[in-house]
Structure formats: C-alpha cells, structure tokens
Image (cartoon, rainbow, N blue to C red):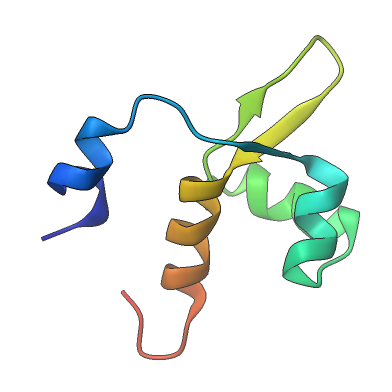
Length: 72
C-alpha cells in the first residue's frame, strides 16, 4: 500500500512545512540541486508566499523513501 493511500496519510489534514533552504540543508543538498529536484517533479512543493516555497514533512519522507537504495 502506498503512503499516499494509507489510512494514516488520509486522516492527517495538516503537516509542518519545511522552508526550502532548511529542506536543502536537511537533505544534504545544495539549493541548485533542490531546485532541479523540484523542477523534475520529484517532490511536492507548497507555495508559502509569492516568493517562498516549502516542502511538507510527509512529502519529504516520501521523497527520501523514493531516493533510498532499493526504494520504489
């Protein structure tokens, strides 16, 4: 069962949003690499304001799971 359709995921209506720069630091990537990942559609992005974006904690967990060796 994918995380997207799991009962836990469906019940949760909000998640903490990690600002883009913090997300890059958290994942050990540069900001330019982070922008490439986003442009490729590999992670879901939340628009925080006209000029700021962030990534939800659950969306980051999904991204990390897909990047893990042997992941989907």
